[in-house]
Image (cartoon, rainbow, N blue to C red; front, side, top):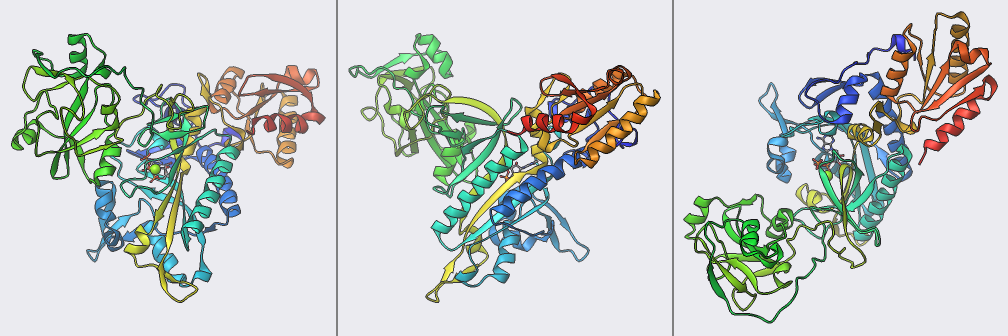
Length: 568
Ligand code: ATP
Ligand code: MG
């Protein structure tokens, strides 16, 4: 492709009101164009990259035994009502009405449709297991579409689904898919971390996410270098360091004027926060509950919500607390009755705590469980932190931010039960089909790749997913020899199977080099009058800026070895 003919032009300056690097660089290179919030057109350069990512995904999922299908985006609302996901997706579900007044949905995912499709063709144990997948556009009315392709309202996803006879067969499909995912990200040249993920209230079901470490990521993950344990903070467990243990002292009421928060309490008494207990009222659907945890630890609301099987969990308002005849402020489990109380294990990792007294401006010193208060349950609802021990006790947890690019999940029989999909086993009895689902954010990968691979000059594309592998830059193209040699080289390289973007414009070397740094194709090939005088062509690697000069006849092998360096 010749740059002079390319649809998109580069922007000199950063677009305004764009914060994320990938978003900025994709606009500046003319890869995408916003149509409306969270909805983009893919211009030629972005589409080429996406097609390369899709090709890698297809090859690996086919290798893992997947069969490709294509399902519709436009669907009747009824199928969503059958599984209750019209409500579960809530406002994220795009819905519309057709001319006959039937409610329709623009699908955010395809578990329902694929289950119906599989059920229409599978009846016997002989037909199972089967894995189906598609690469298709999804719609989600995200509350906060952001960062270009990172979180769109319309985006491309690869979604795969396995249908299995039993747990063993599901485990096998799940493992095979995890392996395929590892291969996909490796072949794309994108390091990812595979982490244990929250699997929702269903509990006990395996779920893993593939996270690309990046500062701009919305996910926080914790991992242990020693043992390899890795989990999303939503799910991570840890061993919380115990505080010193002392002989139990007597409970004592003290004055704490205007002290409302744990940090204030700790500094007022000159004690560490871990020497305090925190008690908080939560509203879980229609029930108000009390949660108790050591003062230095945050409640993990996802763990709590899963435990309670709640649809909605949030802090209770003062009005809700008062309505239940409870006192907001200096909240404490001490002396409180008739309220469901859930505590974190950390209340047992220490003693002689300072705790609330349910009386304004007062606290108790030397509060000890179970001597001074009761709880209904003690469970793990702690937010794991960097520096805590890994749950396997083999080392400390470290944290990193990242972008979720893939998610695999064992669904069990949730959808097959709801949609009545059973098979006949060897003995002739009807058995529910088990299911797994496996998603990859195809368009998100492109943005995440740029988040992970850039410098102050622009993108640094990993070779396997670069829109073109090579950028041929002709300096002084009005020089006849440069024009002839460039054209010759352009043909030779293309005939050797490389994809080449040829900057054939009548621009200065400065403009061309800046644009080429901005787009960040892996290798730049420079044809200039000076190089030609020496009978050489110059090659420059974008990732590390190293350059070398080669003869015309050695060019293809030199390029091949440079590209190989870019594969992980
Ligand atoms: P997130 O937590 O980021 O909202 P999710 O867990 O809701 O994502 P899944 O339902 O697991 O997403 O979808 C599978 C994959 O699709 C995700 O791993 C992610 O890579 C991608 N994806 C999800 N939502 C979006 C979006 N709004 N824009 C782009 N890609 C997305
Ligand atoms: Mg997910």
